[in-house]
Length: 311
Ligand code: 3EB
Image (cartoon, rainbow, N blue to C red):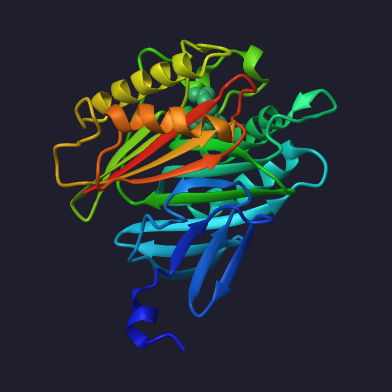
């Protein structure tokens, strides 16, 4: 029997990796969102909103409240075309978050680089997601897209987590990267639906979500075949985004702020090199960092890094 203090301190909503399949497990008033991508190093559990409390369900999403934020999570089976599954999941997500602004979405896409009838699963996912956004938000939907990440996982379910709130956030772009929602059709029939970062506040506290960031300049992949070059390009993009988000060159490292990073590696064997490099300039003691093995949305990308900053 756990003692009462342990029960009370345990977070109501957390995310775990290395699961066999994407699933939402609920026990003793706690929800664990279990994701099938291998954990490599760092925190075993991702807890971004330690004070989150249950806030019911809507459109198949389990909802949680943390201050003025709404956190929602759901899975969607993919039987057949991932575009159809993505469209359905995003229809539900956009209904569950209606009336609020989206701040951040984490997407986990099964077999993201595999192809079905010649179309890469990521591109099919992008098509379904984009149609759902256009349907819900109208022709100007590209101005309302939140920070996001989309990485691969195993299994047969799309899994998403969103964070939304009632403030009107500032969506940030990187002047050295074409906005993903304006990528030309050579990257897929419908462009990816996300902005590079979201800057907002909750209950007076600053909140910055930096999207999954990789070695892309303009809309081209940089450093194909070179982990070191991809890392430098990714860190450069992150630095630009930190500046643009009002966090200085190094993610508010000098301020009283909680910093969370996730690092996705296509090849687990790259962990030592990546870790050594990012610990040199990006990560500092006290930061929460999780390293995961994941396929990334372009087959030639080897690494992707995201950041969340909370005052
Ligand atoms: C990129 O910059 C790399 O489709 O939601 C990063 C963050 C990437 C989010 C998404 C994709 C997504 O295009 C990939």
